[in-house]
Structures are given as structure tokens and as C-alpha cells.
Amino acid sequence: MARSNNRHVVAVTDANALARAAADRILARIAANGDPVTICLTGGSSPQRLYQLLATEAYRRQIPWQRVHWFIGDERFVPADDPLNNMAMARRTFLDRCAPAANIHPIATDTADPEQAARRYESKLQSFYGADQLDSARPLFDVVLMGVGPDGHTASLFPDYPAIEEAERWVVGVPKAHVEPFVPRVSLTLPALNSCREMLFEISGADKRAILTRVLAGENLPASRAQSLGETIWLVDKAALPENFRG
Ligand code: 6PG
Image (cartoon, rainbow, N blue to C red):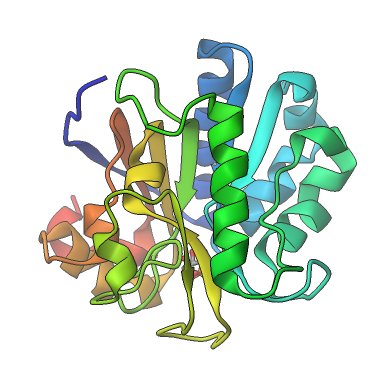
């Protein structure tokens, strides 16, 4: 699969419509792709409505849970049951009620430090993928969900941090966060995140408009550099949509 620079902005009315659009795209990818389907989740507040929606009967019954595997793009280096833990939020919101335990793949944080957690998750991803080199013809993930922070970070790849330039590793430890919560992080790198059929950003609310304007103007920010080998979709609600994208 060759990189297509295929970035589309899809405008929706509000946060509820955004969650529905994201859920429908996920269902379409699951239907189109094989066995197993691999989905890389994200943390933060942006995906929470989507996760709640996936657990509702209408969506839940359309997902073949046995063949879908759930990963996470970045994690805060806090215990698995800490309210700040990204996978804990996803588990609480939908995974624990819907997905077989063996299909949930958290970043373990019971390690000595974020670097060790990163090495372990990298091995896990490589063994699931069946190789330690990414092949652009065979993406690691079917879908990667993403959010954007006020500084243009995505996952835990912060502007001007060395992790953003990582070209070999799939997962790295990030000793200090650039924005709240100020806990160390573990993050997939751009080569791993970009290795997907579809990358789906969810952007909602007026407080995202300034950073989204910068990203869509092509400023060199981590979120601008996150681009799928296949399609990159920016789902944006009205409140977050920059002036020049308004009809
Ligand atoms: C995290 C995230 C991070 C998040 C953005 C947007 O661990 O915080 O994975 O990259 O997606 O910061 O966060 P919000 O959705 O809360 O605005």
C-alpha cells in the first residue's frame, strides 16, 4: 500500500454526529477487512462518546467481537486502574462489556519505567504482526483513532520532542509530557501509527479550532505528520471547523 497523502476533512454537526460518523466508519472497515481486524484506540476525552456508542445494542450487535483486536496508541504511565489510564477508560466505557479479554491489548505499566513498557509493547505488536519490520503493503492496523492536543501533539508525540523523529522503533517511552496530565507516557511512533488502512481523527468543540487551523494549514506539528498509508480522515464538528472550511 503506497502512501497516498489522502487526507479528507469531513464536517459534521456536533459531537453526537461525530461519534456516529466515527462508529460507522469503524463498522465499514470491520466489514471490509479480514480476520483479525486490528483497531488502535486513543485516550483523552474526544473518543469517549464513540466508545459509549459502540457499547449500545445498535452497534454492539454489528461488531464481530471475536475477530476484532483492540490496541492503544499511547498510554499514561500510571497503574492500569488509575482514572488517567487511557486503556482503563476504553475498558470501562465499552471493552470490558463487549470484547473477549484476549482481544484487549493494553500497554502494561507495571514495569520499571516507560522505556521498558515501550519495549514490551513493541514486542507484543511485532509478534501479533508476525514480523519486526513494517511492510507498507500490509498495514499493522486497520483503523487508528487519534486526537489532537492544544500544542498539536497526537498520541504522546509532542512537538520538538525526539520521539516525533523516531524512524525505527514502533513504541517509545516519553519521560515528560508537554501538556497535562504531566505524567510520563508510552507512545507508538509515527511509523507504527501511520501503518494503517485508515486513520481517524475526532475533533470537537470550539477550543480545538485554533490548533486545527494550524494543522490544516500544514504547519509542522506531530498531528500534521500523522498520515495513514491509506486514508486519513479528519472528522470535525461545526464548533471546531476553521473559518476557511465553512461553507
Ligand atoms: C492522551 C491522548 C492524547 C489525546 C489528545 C487530545 O493520552 O492524552 O492520547 O493524544 O488524544 O491530547 O485529548 P482530548 O481528546 O482530551 O482533547
